[in-house]
Amino acid sequence: MNLLYLLPYLLLTKALSDENHDVRRQAVNALAAIGEPACLPALIETLSGDDEDVRVRAVYALGVIGDTAAVPALIKALRDMKPVTGTDGGVSHPAVFALIRIGEPAIPALIQALRDEIGWANYVLVSMGEPAVPALIQALSDEDKDARAGAASALGWMFNWDVVKNDEYIKEAVSALSKALGDEDKDVRNNAAGALAEIGPAAKEDVPALIKALKDEDSHVRFESARALGDIGEAAKAAVPALIEALRDEDELVRSMAALALRDIGPAAKEVVPALIEVLIDENSSIRDNAAKALGRIGEAAKDAVPLLIQVLRDEDEGVRRSAADALGKIGEPAKAAVPALIEALGDEDKVVRLESARALGKIGEPVAVSALIQALRDEDTVVRRFVAAALVKIGKPAKEAIPALIEALGDEDKVVRRNAARALKKIGTTEALKAVEEQEKNR
Image (cartoon, rainbow, N blue to C red; front, side, top):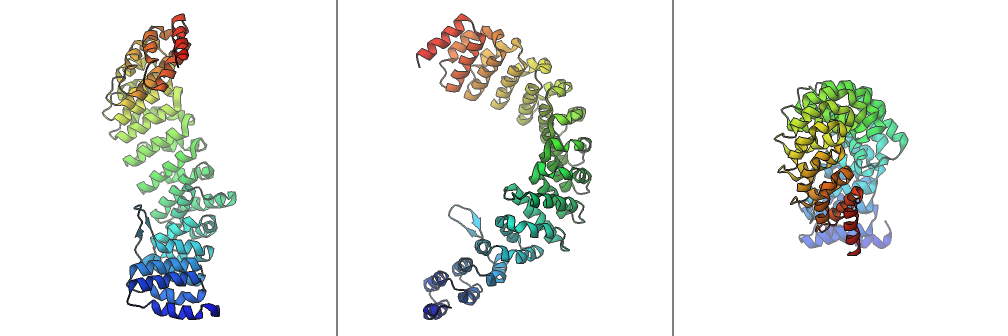
């Protein structure tokens, strides 16, 4: 220690045991300001005291000093001390800050903390970012299951936060997580599948392992595996047959995620249409919803689903009705048999169903819908009116009977409605329509 600090150090360490709280607190702050490693023993000893405020300040002081000798005490504090609630309601742990400040030298002790099931250790490793990745990949082969599960979880959060940029690290993580899908412990398998979901398309090499994991005995693993395949996207098209089978899984959450995965794989999954039609009548609304979304993503190739999607437009669940209307619009012209049902849906109690129905009618483009769209131009909801006017833009010239209503809409209180109405009038292109737009532009 610098001799200049020796006397203050001796006085401050004595002050740490003062009966007055404020004196103890200021002593800790002063030792942090000195910042000498020689201050560590006194600060570490303070961690065993009863004054929570002083203990928190001592932990922060250890982080400021940043000496690796403090790591064991900080790991113990990570386990023993309570998190701190900030003024914004957020919860943090003082030892997290300190260990992050120390950085890479703390990583081996943090891996041991995973073995000891110290929850905050996972968060610290994630916050350290890429420097912790090699140790976490190695920990996926650790003999301790808690270390393996914690490592897989931490890698998942790292990819979720997009902190891993090194291509070699990503490649190594994908390979190690693929092996972890076959781990004897279900938590390890679950976390590994979840981490691959966060990696997304870069995990495409793991599609065969994820297909196998769709048959795992644990429903959580099957759920996360389906999620991972969906997040990989079109590159996971080899999984379509297995995901079709997963649509009949005994667990409704797995069925729902399988439908969602098929949606995300998209048009490459068009052979799944018959199976998706089958689950459109599943008792679980989330599964019906995701099946409708998947059919919409497949698009025109899902035209065989139109009759049942028409029925689903009257589903008791508003989310399912929304997705059915959206799907019919994405199927497009082959869904023209749905026009009467979509016209009826323009009066749905849910505004999103109404706007999705208007959008679908515009995409299908049948002039028979124009009269209903004219009425919907007076919908009480601004966003619905925007979509109705946009649908008339799509229909174009055959919507000329809407000219009076569109001219009226040029005076709508919402500028997007006014703009879409003007676009529709220009598309219709009659003298009356163009004159109305010209006058509106002059009066701006």
